[in-house]
Image 1 (cartoon, one colour):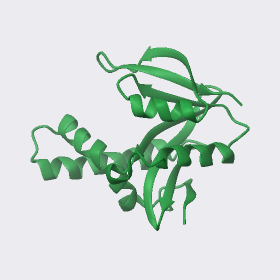
Image 2: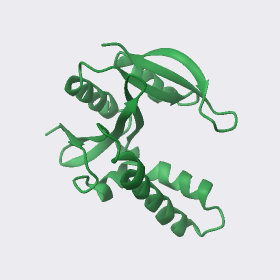
Image 3: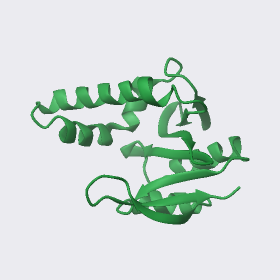
Length: 163
């Protein structure tokens, strides 16, 4: 059975299972933030950093939540939404590596949009992330403007789904 689950607190979140979705990002973050540490420790530290962010920064924001998509008893795709400008910012869209190219992110985004249909939703997507850009556009988002996210030479598209 396929379905959407929304989590408004860290305690309710199936964090360990969600980390299976974000494995590639956590490996990359471990290498970036902890280059002096052994590989296994890099991953553990990146997961801890992710956990701390959710606990200390993300969930304390009013109206912030995580959305997970479950298929056949397994969480396969995730995203976060938090207040931004005059709406919500969709961020951290990810699908398990072994579940990609099967429409999981598309189903997740559309299910979330149905839940929050009266709100503006923005998204930031790296210009190098063509797959996420295509998925968001298929879900009704359009490029609003381009920006730099603060990282050196990291240009992003800022997208908006109009209500």
